[in-house]
Length: 115
Length: 114
Image 1 (cartoon, helix red, strand yellow):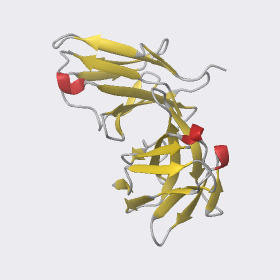
Image 2 (cartoon, helix red, strand yellow):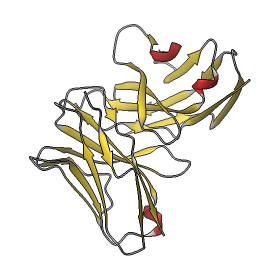
Image 3 (tube, chains in turn blue, green):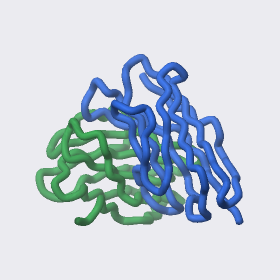
Image 4 (spheres, chains in turn brown, purple):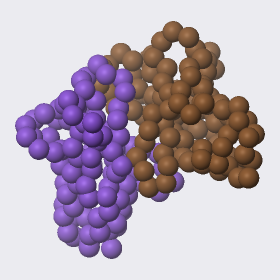
């Protein structure tokens, strides 16, 4: 079984500041890792994913994440945030060994960007 | 290319009524997942379906909930005799096939039970 812990439920930052949203996972098997963003009253949109290869993954909207296997982490970062980045961010994993298995989500981190 | 379409976007039901939530996957996608999002919680997996088959329903409550994905038409999540605790956002996601690693999500149906 897998589980995902997002360490911060809310992260307030000022515009143009850097931000890091933390995600740790627990799993007895190898996993794929994902970050999704949810804007108010919208569905989820994929920001980026780690499947294999380079541990630094770049996604849309200037976000990137780094997979750290020894620390079982997949933290999301952006060097300079915009007001429009205000949203809910979800980290998720799925079992690499079983095709088609569902995503396991963390509880989410609310990013609030103010001017 | 239309994305995953869910309807209705908002649904209000009185306790004891039935709720039907519909999901049309992206064109060319034959795999559908349903998730439920409770307030202050992440999304929880409910059921995974292929056309005419339930692949994994380990996240579905044992009573009152059912899902189908017929050969023609959208996938349906059905909740019978709704209770206040069923109030949540229900999201559908689709993928082209079993081995695909990217799921595309709909905008969700927000169910309110009064």
